[in-house]
Length: 177
Image (cartoon, rainbow, N blue to C red):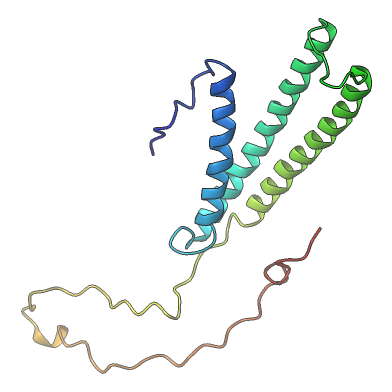
């Protein structure tokens, strides 16, 4: 897998590059949403498992990003390098900001924990062959020395299976928390 937009291990050269990284992140989340909408980007439980693991890790990383933003703004305020366009009291503004960023950090940590628990819960889930998958088994293109082995036999289809009831977690789609 290659990342041709930027080197993921590189540090940002300036504020513009930092802003570009976050805009790229937003676009990659949109791409992920499209990919996980269904086939062809999502066909195996192992992919769901991998996505949940990456989301858990990303959520913890977002917590770190918000902590670093908080430290930056508070440091700049202590050094008297901040102002307000409308002359508002910076102590009040930054107090409201600190409450909001702390709440956001708790949410991202919770998201990381929940995504990790969800990933752990499905670690043993595997996909079964789909009923609509009509691929035939691989056969040799050359006949064998024993022609009776080349005869596929009668074309008998298995009776349709009853669909098992959907698990409770699969029915909860769309219900808010």
